[in-house]
Length: 285
Image 1: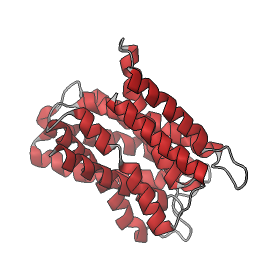
Image 2: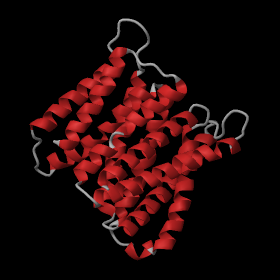
Image 3: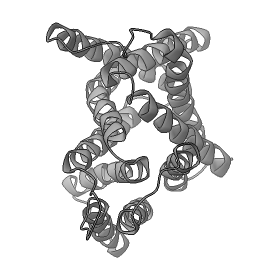
Image 4: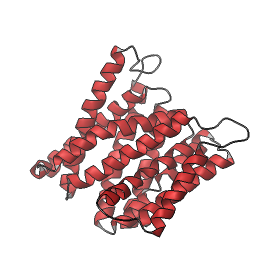
């Protein structure tokens, strides 16, 4: 059960990342974030009503609100990085979000074991190699690497906050609903401010209707992934669930290779692979 649902989570997150990255190449990233999250919020609202999730309301929901504030920053940074750089580099680097729980543990007095120390070293090496060095050809832009690391920090923060926001499945639905309502409000305000400064809110030609199915897929796949991850964590060790769910960059990279014929230089592929290996070491240490 744990393996099945955790691997399903990887599949859903990987495809959602691929879809979001493609959308931001022709539609402003803020629009993608707000629209996809709004669709997700609508679906979650129905689930909350259907499951009686309102009965789970309490002080813990403030964690969901905080996650909703951090989420748009993480998603926007991630989508911009996907639009600027190769998905096969960006997506594995984003899995460094698992370092956030490790950092929280250090603050609380925990000390990493040998495996976690090795994971940190491997992951940092992967970050360096993913952006260069090179002998020829163009490296991944530093801005892309920076945006990806900001996204990883934001994702890790969101995961930690959501974990504190609920203890039951119905509570999880409510927490995710509150998180996304907050994200839509924050993202909508940022989109409004961006438009006031003259930035476009719609793709060239002003047509967004053709993108609605893809936006819905990105938002709903993300919601479904959160749900399958919760089920995986409830039916087995959280560590096993987290490790298997963290394999989603492989799905994104394979999708980019299959649909976009994306090719990575050897040093970039090696760096992305090391970052993923470091992430797995951190999660299992």
